Length: 145
Image (tube, rainbow, N blue to C red; front, side, top):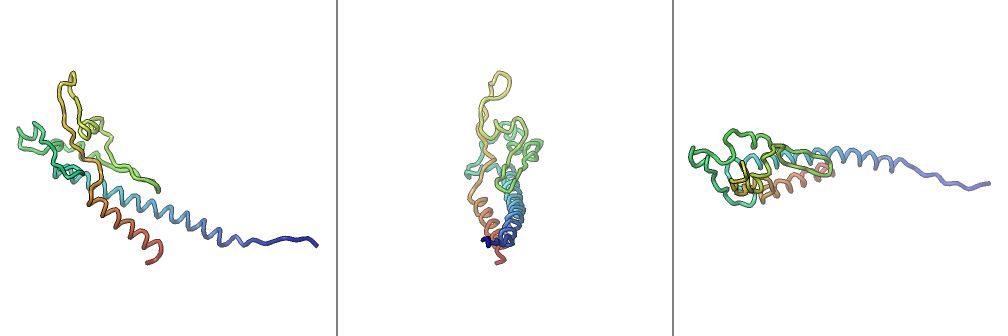
């Protein structure tokens, strides 16, 4: 007589199924976080206040035309989007001039114009609280609470 053992793989396979399902649910969470952050960034264009709580320095155009800084034609504001995977969220703009407005620097012909930083990307305390609430709801739904 020989010897053998039998391994019941059903629990292991249920675990694999759960992991796959949770990965899909994590994608849902990351999409919700991305949408929340995108909305927050767009709101910053409307208020002119960065994620650090500081008001942006008004642009010369906004002063002369009684307009809003960085929203003349709304292209930059409307270009804000997010990309999400089950592990991360990236929020930003694909406009080539987005960086100079976020970080500030020299611009124009011969780099004669000095633009101040007007940060619109970032996470503030309100964003953190909303992301935390999304994560709590996600965890509750995962465990049926």
